[in-house]
Image 1 (tube, helix red, strand yellow):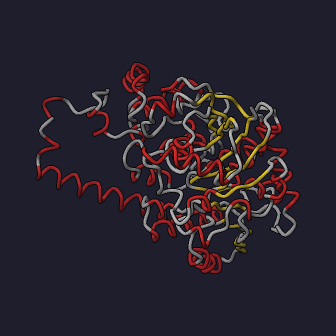
Image 2 (cartoon, rainbow, N blue to C red):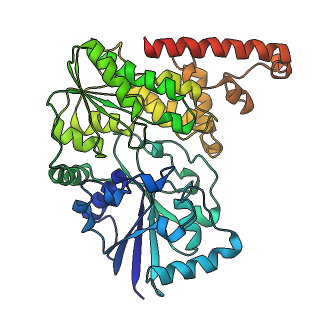
Image 3 (cartoon, helix red, strand yellow):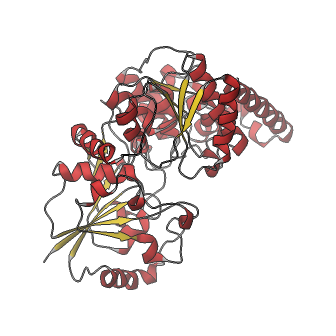
Length: 443
């Protein structure tokens, strides 16, 4: 019986990771390899899909066909749709007919298996073995949601880039899924292909590159706070002596953010270039060779530092750590990674944490999720020895109290969460703290 491998991707970065894994023979030979593309933007009709982005044609020849998950589900949105249990056999037959799979054995390669749309796809092909590949830093944290064992036990391995050398991903650890590194050389070669295919990219060499993120879309920051964050990046780069600035906005961010930065750049008397083309940050590194990369928290910060040896700086991460909710938010480990391994504006050199410390710290934070009970002994040892002023920002007293971990409220103060007057005082204190963090970001 023939085998068809279905590779699922929603970003060009993910597709590049898949291409590098294929080039490195990470997958067994198959009769066909299909790339299933999903556009997860809030309004997919107004946002280009990854197969329409510059450079994708350089990746297309790794696959026999390119399919659209959006078209298969229309009019439903990929991020919001999941199959009803009784409808799963019907949907599988429909997709086999739609994509011409026949009776082929199907193997799935997906990203972000803990959420839709990848989770929905794995639920439809109930007997298909699964490989998961990591689309960024989130793989270094635990699985944020509990996954049905009927899905989790089918996962064979976790493919990931070695973004933080020496650190092992925790994703899907509850199912004993072994991690496997995609060779860095292959990934850089694929990025080189994307860079060669980008003929229209013309930017001033030696500039400072600002990485925009759309955190307000996730309700983490307000739109005004995110605008202030970008302005703080600009001011910080100028304070470091950079006179040529390139701003790479998030592909789905509103255009008015760029206009605000342009006014600020004019006030500061520096040259600002806004990169409108939806290219990967790593392609910009290849073509621009920036003197500095600035962001809040982003996988691109780590790729700049680890893969290209470009100086990086961060700002606004402390405010982000304060705002992330619930504690097991999947952005927490990437934010902590940026905090530990990317210098703040005040620092002039990269000072990575010791391997043992960073591993224990990450495992302690991961224990505070819903899926990592096995990490409790390591978390207790770390918290008992290292929980102090500089590490408190990584943990929440309420979470430690709920899990009965070191740093929790003593039993005699257990009445405090139920006291209305004390809750009002705490809310006021938190409000003042957030205001101080905002001033620090914009200052």
